[in-house]
Length: 375
Image (tube, rainbow, N blue to C red; front, top):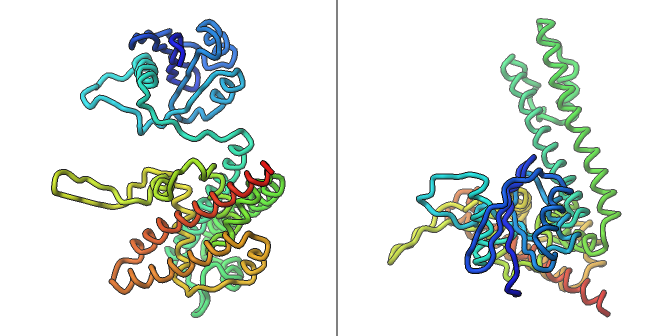
């Protein structure tokens, strides 16, 4: 690296950016604070020297990636840093924007920071859509809980054999008349809220279908390949694809498992080895999708009609990985269950192993697509 390289640390907030520069032998100086506006960023970095001599970093946060996209478009090398993995002094009890920027610049120059993978704008847009659909599903669940608890609190129960949320149950709820007008008004609003949230999910599903159809070819190939796995339909496959981003960035399956936060925590020292609950430090959206899919492996291995039709169009390697996943995870489920392990722990263990098969299929598909493009 050139001797005149300048390492710039940015402490980014909604309205302001604190800037510090490290150059030479650990010399770090603060450049003050600038407005968080593209023209202000362009003007400041233009004064610091040529784009090829600058290395810029800032921590991932609520401001997202527009600043990264702006800097890379300017030809400036930029990395977004994982805040939880940045080194910090345990005894340091003073935190300011200036100090944070100086710490970033100094650590970046020393090479002790861990960057995160940054998607392009199109990929980020699809990920936002998938996460919005997940939030709508959670809102639907909350609305149903409110309605169910309201009926329970007022002593309203359907006839025997009528399961909640079925068509028969909904007919009973919509015809229900409570003693007081206020109660009926509340009941109507709760029903309308469930309908509203359910319609949002339907609209999101349609939007995701259209987005996948218009997505780049490599992303469509990954989404199709992941659906060969049991318990992974289109919504789950899209979630896995957009949240992992690039499977090639994980050298081994264990790295991908760590990214999901499904690996056991550990506090070992000397001769003592202590492992605890899963870390939950990874991607929570991935973790939810994987745990939901893992429940399907309690059933004996089989291919449904959709999977049979899909596997005719997939490479034999992908189909083989998916079938191996069914056999192994099903055996694993019953082996752990027969040891009287609690169901949540069993499913978590299956979800962790499922990550390995997802990674294998994703990486195989990415390599096959890269080879086709190079041919």
